[in-house]
Image (cartoon, rainbow, N blue to C red; front, side, top):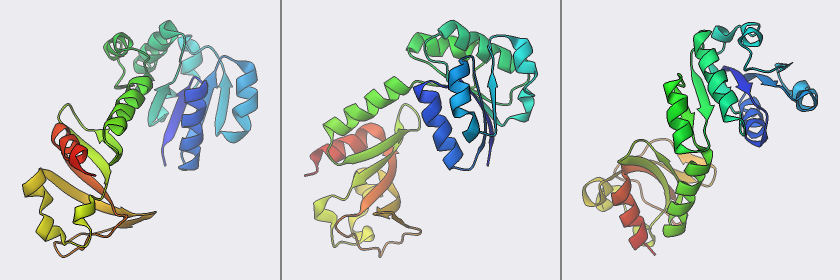
Length: 217
C-alpha cells in the first residue's frame, strides 16, 4: 500500500484515482474545482479544494509524507509546471507529471519531475503495434530497444515442448510466464507443453519480436 497525493481530478485523474483505491492505496486528492472535490471526497482518504500553484497551500499537505505525488493537471500546462516545481521544492519523494506533448515532457523534467507520463502518445504507440500484429495483446516499453510483450501462442507451437521450440535461441525472446485465462503458470521448465489458448509473456528486442509476431497466422 502506498500513500499518494493526486493533484488534478479531470478524466485522467479520476480514472487513476479509482484504480489506486481498488489496489488498496491511501489517496489524497486536490483540485481547485469545489464541485469536483465535493463529489469525489467520500471515496478518498482526504480531499482538498485548493489552487496547488500556491506553495502555501501545498505546505499544509505535508508533501514529504507521500510516497508519490502525481500531477494530473490536463489543460493548464503553466499550472502543471508550477505545481511540479513546488512539490520538489517542498521535498516530495517522487513526482510523476502528465504531459500532452513532447515539449511539455521536456519542460516538466527540467523543473524537477522524476517521471513524465504521456498518455496520448502511449496509447497511440500501443494501438499502432496492435494494428500491425493481431498476435500482440499488450506490451510495455522498457527502453528504446527492449519490451515485454503479451502475445497469443503461435498455432504451430501448440502441443510442443518449450525445450523443443527453444524461443530464446531461435527467436531471441525469453518467455517470462504463460497466462491461461486468469491463471498464470508460476514456474516454467523445458518440459512445459504449450496448449491452444496460451498467452505468452515474453521479453526481448522490440523490433525482433514484432517481426516474429507479424509472421504468425
